[in-house]
View: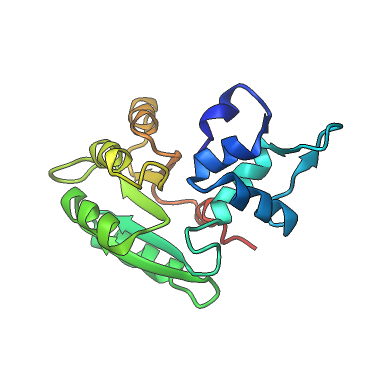
Length: 189
């Protein structure tokens, strides 16, 4: 999950952060003034944001201004996996709302109706596979920056590359490394 401008420079302007997070530069400045998003001040008095700080903040941020629960959509045709993840992520310890989908078609419907902050997406499903679903999510108006984390029981360099090229943030191997997943979701202590 990298902002487009961050690929070549370590610092971002308020406008670059705003474009990436689909908010106005005034909102970004407000986050900085409240101490939610740490900024560094240039000798000329301008705010600049380190790439790592923007990525940290983005993992915690949601469209409700971080007031509402993290909305997670789990997409997997294996009911054992969806059941395990739903139980894990619905724990009272976390502020989350979790929904599931069994295939790519249902995932597309739920992206529109449930409005998740993060999609945990299986790579191999009947019908549309994970990379195809991820690509379609990226093309949906208003969802281009939706976080997508791939999951697969058969991780290979080729399948990982295909998922990343489709727009996923990363790809995890099943069985899932739970501490890493929780860290990626911003739920780790």
